[in-house]
Image (cartoon, rainbow, N blue to C red; front, side, top):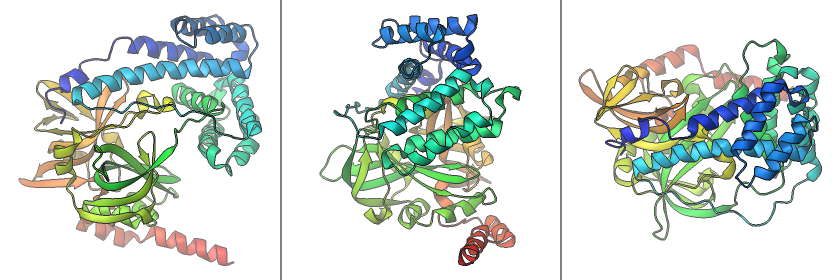
Length: 461
């Protein structure tokens, strides 16, 4: 549990974090204007970046890259060094924040083990990615237009059929879609410079040679679910389940994640999105019924993500997530963080906090305050801001956003109308249980069934 240590987490940011983020902001400003027309201020920002990392393993290459870029010579190796420097700064921020959180939780974290060798991939496809990303960097976000965005289409189409490169393809496709929707970017009042900088950086690094994922192992054992984090977008829904794996053979328990996703349209919202995931009945039943799962030979990536196969899981006994957290969360070993995932925005650590009071949108405990991240509450479950405000126990994810720690609720125990109530994001995975929601859904009709019927009719034609 995170109780008396709350003040250690929420009491300001570690030393150096603000300075590192200022360096990133300077780089992002230079990328916004484009490396083809660097002015004095963007050039000084890149020089400051090189100076800050001069003593690191990147120092010599980064210094040369900045000199070349400022002089007007922009090559792939220079951009790779700049992307590596930006990622290293965010990695240092990530490590400082996560280290402080792990210390407050008393959480043990496994170390990342580099994988020897290189993954054989199509070099020409990676070169095509780097060329488009280089053109973006030269033009800058302010110089992006429809022609520049469209230049990525052929490369992305060639990447998608290659399993090892599909993640890179999806990332570039998402960046291209955002840029296309915003073009011409030069007319925008405000730019998501940090977000686009993150995507550009990750794309540039993924487009280099080398294994990033660290391989997978086959694991068997019992999975105890802690909660479900639901991401709803206009065209996709993704459910990320956090849990504790008790491996067969008596090895220490491990914190893990697993995700399932499905395509959707923007008219499918609320509890109806669960029906899009009906290819995973074992996982959804476990969420709705609060059951453990017995896993057999499930692939587990080095970063702690299970590659979910519903046919390799079987329903186990009832297992209350709050009881699981109270008994096992403190001793479970956290997974290592992959090199490219060392970014503060990706921190999402399961915690259990109990015995607090609520003031507005923040919990109060032991003289410390922690804000709830209510914007992440999904519309497909029973958890509401009102229920969070009435809660005294929360099973959630610690996140760092906007310069502060936030608690994203996955489940709460509350008192509503003088009665104890427990609600989890995944309670409606097999359909809503609230009579009012069931009645409203029946009145509005089954949007998923209608769309599937229409799609089938079109295919038959």
